[in-house]
Image 1 (cartoon, rainbow over the protein chains, first blue to last red):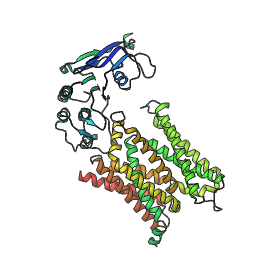
Image 2 (cartoon, chains in turn orange, yellow):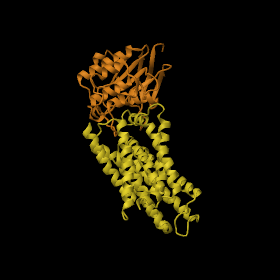
Image 3 (cartoon, rainbow over the protein chains, first blue to last red):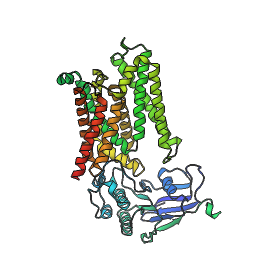
Amino acid sequence: MDSALLELRDFQVLDQGTKRPLTKPFSLSVQTGTIHLVRGPNGVGKSSLIRALTSESFYQGGLLKAPNLNIATHPQISAPMFALPLRLSDILSWADELSDSARSLLGDLIPDRPWDSCSGGERQRVLLAMLFSKSFFLSKSPTLLLLDEPMNHLDEISQAEVISAIREWIKGGSNRGAIIVSHEDISTLKCEILTLQAATPSLGRR
Amino acid sequence: MIWESIQLYKWTILSALAIAPALALVGAQSLARGWSLRALVVGQGTSFGTYFGLLLVGWLGWVHDSGQPAEDFKQFIFILTISVLVAALIGLITIWIENRLLRPGDPSRPQAVMAFFTLLLAASALIVAVSPHLESHLASAFTGDLSTASDLESRLTLGLGLGVLGWVWLRWQRLSQAAFARVVLLKDGPGSEPLEITFSLLALVAMALTVHALGVLFVFGSLFVPSSVLTLVGGKSQSLAAFRWQLVTTAVLGAAIGFGVSLISTTLPTAPMIVFFQALVGATVGYASSRRS
């Protein structure tokens, strides 16, 4: 695993409740500089794979991580609101320094805009920008991004900006990679595709 | 006349002016974490713990002939400790109900927490029923009045109020970041665990002491009214820092005006007046803020 950030061998994601395998065994080697797109039908365990890799639990099989691997996770979110008044400038001030890829992702967003009045896409862009920067949320700069449906709520232009930002971020460091779970067609990302298969047939296919 | 009353109740007034903004900041941070129901139950838990402590004091014979608990530092700390321990236990049970008994997002979860809250109310009423010698004190501990707090309680509440106010004020951004990470990013930021534990403990002690000194109505009012009315009327267009100022202004002015009105009047009780004026001041500040932005 000279240049691999992460290796999965005969890996199966387990259901958190029943602890039974959700996926058929699969292998994955995340090399530095690569982006992996995880696809599969609903309920196959795509988000559970992200959770399993983050928590290092609810899986069976081999899991090898490179030394000094720093994982940053972007969970699947559905336009979350926040109870306190909060402007985008408040959130961005929590970053020690915004990276170039973060700045390009933020684009023309107005800093005085309240968080709750932003669209889902605008919120996604801010959260992803924070992920590309050293901030309160991450003690160290990440080397592996685990992104769960990062294109949710984004229009085509914003999707292209996210893809470009991920590419720039990966180019910006010598040992970086990303795993992206997405329903969207992001073939322009030039990524390796992993299609998960259910361990047991779904109701509709029995 | 008014000046004499102020002289007489100066420690109670000062303690209320210090603890009200502290509880308002704590209440806003609880709201940010989605802990409002939990705060309500824990608040009732501190109240129940105080009643339980008073009951124990009665059983131990530490009361005056009048039926009022003697003002004694040892007793006071005993009741406060019982109150904090009972509230902490109730808080843990509430978290267990929220996290273990029912799956997150289950719509019946709030109802289960409210059922627990109702049980605590019933238990508090039961304590009042079995200890009639403390009935007058227990009743005033609910609504709160100028005569409820002793100088000792008031001075301790003042000190703790200033301490909690300073701690939350200085960590307002960090606490908000931690809440944002938890609610929006569904994870805890690095180093946030000691912050959350300290915040929970300080909130618990502040609530327990204030229930004992100023009554449960004052605690619930200061926790929930300023943040709710400010966001309801003022919206959420202001910055985090501005909101912190608005919370403190609303809580302090509301407590000061409420106290003033109850001192002038011979019939109006203190805590309900404070809650009422916190709502009124909050609506005014919120409206002014929405007009500016």
